[in-house]
Image (cartoon, rainbow, N blue to C red):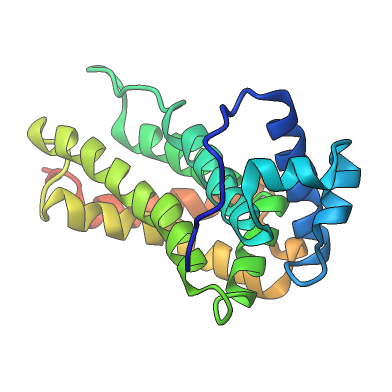
Length: 214
């Protein structure tokens, strides 16, 4: 899928941001086919020509929405992650990380985005790649870097950090995310259910990959 047409505007540009906010709202509520540039221009308070000047095409704008929403969610998961101190308890640390990750990934707008991208895979197969690279692939890469440090400290054993990262990510994410994707926002776990799921996932993970218990 070509991504030509978008202009290198600064993200801080006021009109650029107004267009992105309006486009996000319209795409998520109307889907790709139900969205047109006239509506986005009207919602953002700029002319249609201004929208095309910034993005070039509806396709380029859609790619921007997918990439920016997924990237921003990843930033909140990983950039706000505390470091594990020498006196910290590993299981509690991993639970805290996993709870934040799961809460963010199952936010209604991000679930809407996933559903929208999956629905458009036949039309825009590269969009799924953008979503994967900035979502699960990035998450596993960040976890791998974190687990390398824990492995060096003797806190994780039994597998290479990349393998452990893959298992951790999907032990935490797979069941709740699949239910929410297929059954709708009502299937998103509440706080108590989320904490129980995460505690079980982390316990299983540490049984396989944690340090030997003697």
